[in-house]
Image 1: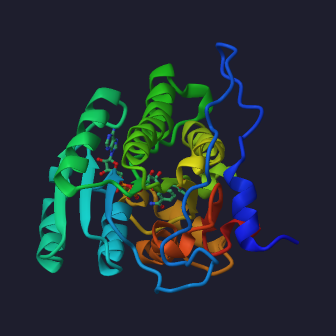
Image 2 (image 1 turned 180 degrees about the horizontal axis):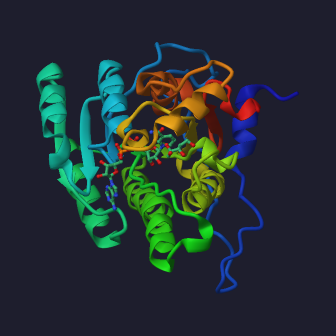
Length: 302
Ligand SMILES: NC(=O)c1ccc[n+]([C@@H]2O[C@H](COP(=O)([O-])OP(=O)(O)OC[C@H]3O[C@@H](n4cnc5c(N)ncnc54)[C@H](O)[C@@H]3O)[C@@H](O)[C@H]2O)c1
Ligand SMILES: OC[C@@H](O)C(O)[C@H](O)CO
């Protein structure tokens, strides 16, 4: 077994093989491995406690899960935050209280439609200029609809896939380009769902379920392609969380069913996702790449 330093020497000469592009050329993913995370010495010894460092962009930033996780990231050391949303104004009270609670952090809102590549690229550039860097991206932007597959319009299908999958891809691409330009690497996290792993019951959600399954596959592809730049890409698969997404008229029966079919006998609360999100965003997750984390109280056991 070679010493860890020799491992790194061997790696420094590596080329990731078999990446052939559609024009017939081979991939340019050649070069030294990304530097060791800075809480470790070159020999791999820990010198520093884990921390969330730098600045983050959260898409769907005005949504319930984004705001709860933004608070957790700020509590663990995040310096700057951009909440990117189609309509940040619908959570202006919560955003103002976040600013009041973390007066030393730079907190901005940006109105962006994640399906629009141009808006995303311009916003990421602007955020990088304003905050100094973009180190973390968490994609929360998403929509859900409950329609029987047999009745679903092409429009509803396309809109769901466009926001949930294309929006996450374009956000990741814009931020990865920025991280590569910075030369710093970073952490990207997609919000998938248990709907990617199990078909929901009792609500019909074919488009949503397909979109979340696509995200899990996408995170593996990006994790494989971007590790060479020090960018880690992972996904989170929450179960049924008690949020406005899961409230509304006529949903009481479904909420009872979800709780009954959960080994823990209840839905989750958004705060119960923050541990894994902080871990993945922080240096504690420095060797976590291409993974999906199911946080569902055991819903997928049945
Ligand atoms: N709540 C749950 O139980 C649960 C479970 C599993 C997965 N998820 C996923 O977590 C994510 C967040 O869920 P939530 O409960 O916070 O939902 P939410 O509805 O509170 O937040 C979603 C946010 O996305 C924004 N958004 C929608 N379309 C957009 C677009 N085109 N561009 C930019 N922003 C857009 C909305 O304005 C909203 O603020 C979603 O992707 C959802 O599918 C939620
Ligand atoms: O599967 C858990 C969630 O993604 C759920 O489907 C969503 O909250 C809509 O009901």
